[in-house]
Image 1 (cartoon, rainbow, N blue to C red):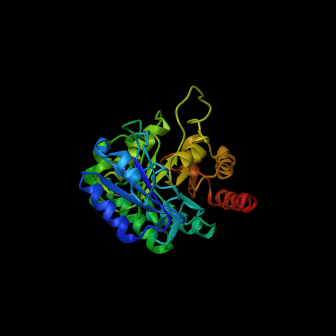
Image 2 (tube, one colour):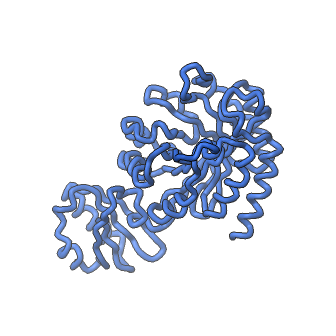
Image 3 (cartoon, rainbow, N blue to C red):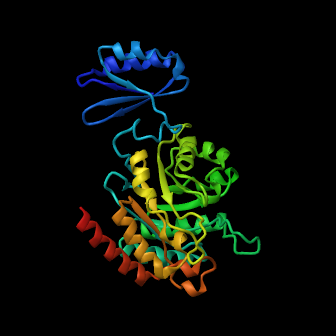
Amino acid sequence: MIAILKNGTTPAQTEHLIQWLKNMNLDVHVSHGHEVTILGLVGDTSRVDIELLNSLEIVETVKRVSEPFKQANRKFHPEDTVIDVGGVKIGGGHFAVIAGPCSIETEEQITEVAMAVKASGANILRGGAFKPRTSPYAFQGLKDAGIQLLLKAKEASGLPIITEIMNIRALELFENVDIIQVGARNMQNFDLLQELGKTKKPILLKRGLANTLQELLMSAEYIMSEGNENVILCERGIRSFETYTRNTLDLSAVPVLHELSHLPVIVDPSHATGKASLVPTMAAAAVAAGTDGIMVEVHNNPACALCDGAQSLTPAQFDALNTKLRKIREVMA
């Protein structure tokens, strides 16, 4: 349920109404827009007398929210959420370029890539320390040693960093990580999501291989319900009958999620296509679709990469791509 307050409502009047609603054991989320203030009510709203609430002098209108996701809902928060990551803003017209290797291999590799992508315009460095792999015999990442190497690359480049968490037990290792990524396989690991909700760190939540957009938003709701509103949604391709590409990139997710939610939406064309030759085209299409950022895999020697070399761009290819994306964004501005 949402209550839209009238223009001219004073802070004291707003606070008095909030306390009245909280006395009904409701959580109240306040969204201050340019023209109106919206109170989002979460909990057992059957206790609320809608007619009484609607009759209050400061209340413009009261509406029930039918969707099961409440805090992630644009009706609760009409204006785009902007997430600040070490001075890099994502959402609300701010564009994030996240780039780096699928897997951290050596200090030299991650630092070299970090400096290269920064020079080409990337503003966030990615790198996998913990790698969920389909085969138990495949390279699983350097784990906590990988995070230490990623932190060294952060110090050398000055870029904020993002890396994926696999389970709750590793959370303390992510203290100095700027964005924690929840991978597709963990999108519905609800215990992990709730624990991440108790932090204030930005969380990049990837859509699962076969999950609907509503299920993605409900997973975001798990994080937000624990108090962490810094959630970034990521479309990274879904499984379909097509086998030529690694996954099927659902670009319609970008405008749909922007319509349903106020959270930033980024696109990962590397995991979606699985082929480096397709990444530039799909990244450009994502920008045209209105994404708030892209996440691209870049490796200084893709042929020798320990993980996902086939979908990784070289630094030179990434530089050309970022130049192209800037031109597209200028045209769309």
